[in-house]
Length: 120
Image (cartoon, rainbow, N blue to C red; front, side, top):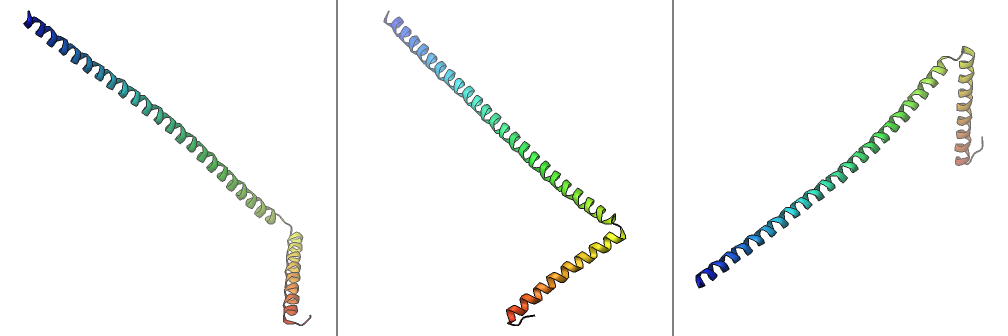
C-alpha cells in the first residue's frame, strides 16, 4: 500500500512538473508571438515613415526641377525677344545702355573727386 502511495506521489510530481513545463512553454510561445507582432508593427511604422519621406523628397525635387525649367524658359524667351528686336530697337537699346554706363562713370568720377578733395 505504501508502495502504491509512493508511486501515486511520484506520478503526481511528474504531472505537476509536466504541467509547469507546459505553462512555461505556453508563456514562451505567447511572448514570442507578442515580440513578433511588435516587431512587425515597428517595421510597418518604419516603412510608412520611409514612404512619406520618399514622397516628400520626390515632391521637393519635382518642385526644384519645375523652378529650373521655368527659369530656363524665361531665359529662352528673353534671348528670343532680344533676337526679334528690329535694328532701330537694338540701336536704341545700345544707346540707353551706353548712356547708363556714361552716367555711372560720371557718378564714380564725381565721387572719386569728392573723396580726393577736388570738385569736378
